[in-house]
Length: 251
Image (cartoon, rainbow, N blue to C red; front, side, top):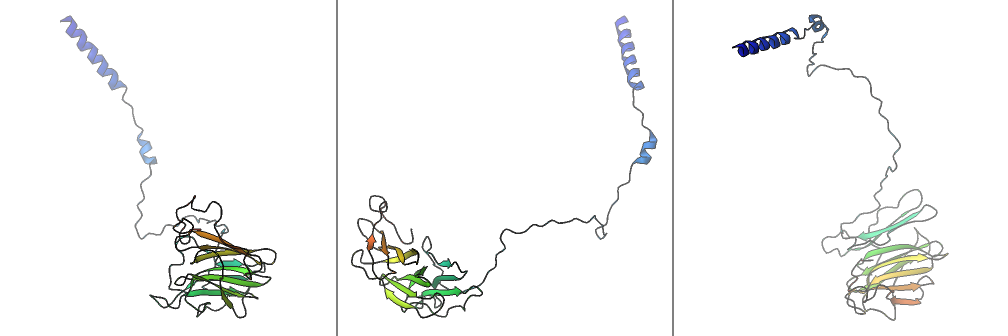
């Protein structure tokens, strides 16, 4: 009985202690709270102005249409040299042009020239006398230019050149060689030397050649194409011991 009375007294003392420690709240603090402001959707809220900072653009392109084509297959893989900017600021540009879908009997090289001020009119015809494609462009001689393309049906390379870039008549010839594969297509070339008279030509054999399903062969002229001291040579590292095939546009 004494234990029960002692337990009851202890519980009463605990309850009394908690009742004495209940925190009080100053009602004046309620007056300091701010009422929420609701803004209607059509209300105008004036914000502080924000200053937007803009910096100069690293590249702000300017585009000019220099020609047209409906022939979308400009390359099978990699692309030839088709745009060249000269030291005087002029530019020569070529592409495979074709308008008469879908067989494109008019296919050939589209050419345009920038004289330092403006581009010429969009070409209405190809450079070549026959159906060609895959043009490669370079300077030639002191002030001339050269375009090499292929007639794929005949697997013949066509050279179109003139002595003064941007003006004058084009002179057309075909690539004549004494040794190498019977067919050649998909040319790539550059020129080098003080007067751009060294022509370096890479071209595909089309068919099987020298143990490869398709081979890339190299030719060189040091006199602007008048003669060739290297004809259709397979460069070391590009032969049948290195590749089974080097197909169209793979270099």
